[in-house]
Image (tube, rainbow over all chains, first blue to last red; front, side, top):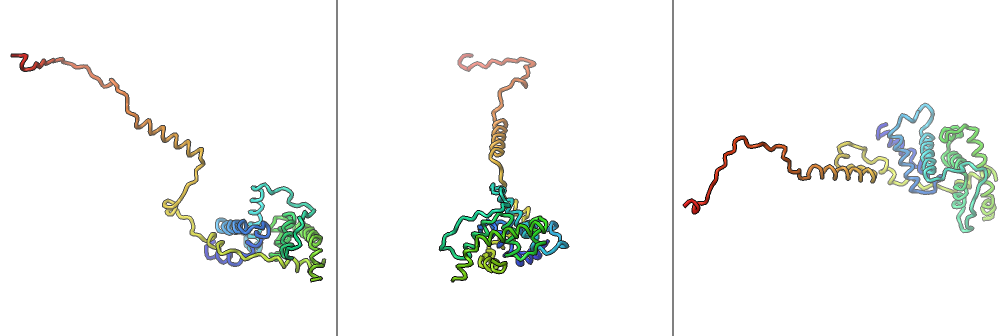
Length: 165
Length: 92
């Protein structure tokens, strides 16, 4: 892949890759590291992306996802990726709605969180999300269902606040 | 809570755009052997560096140590011709 081609891919996907990593990790510095490594991986090994298997964005998000999991594994945060239950530490009542939503999403087990972010925020289809996370569509659907249920339960109090306000 | 209500609530959490520094980090100049020869750095593990340093010091002491006196090249005199030189006042 030439620098010009990479530049085009970079311009079209940098916010998506950075945003995904930022929402997954909650750290702008880590998200920037992950996004950089993701694009450099494309530059070094362009052959790993097969254009016949769909657009490049799901592939890039899949690379970013693997880099995040690798980093977590190195930091010893690999355990309990897919618990059913959501353990949310209550936020202060002074927090804004977006902060509470962020807190709730980031409290999701990682395998639920990545699927929710890929589909709700990055606009991937179930099939694309499945390719990105290396899972069958059925598994993606189940994780998304669990993630939505968890969020409904946690965010329900905000709904009445929104309606009242 | 319906899917639409949940979705609209999720939309309140917006990610910031990618920082401009990301572009510089991705598109910094590619590796060149000539630039590496001038500006490159090599990271060496400390134990390896210490071992190499010890070997260099040992080699240097071996090379620069003054050699011991040896009589291996000594040859015996074939024809002994002693010549006695006396001082002038003694001959008078």
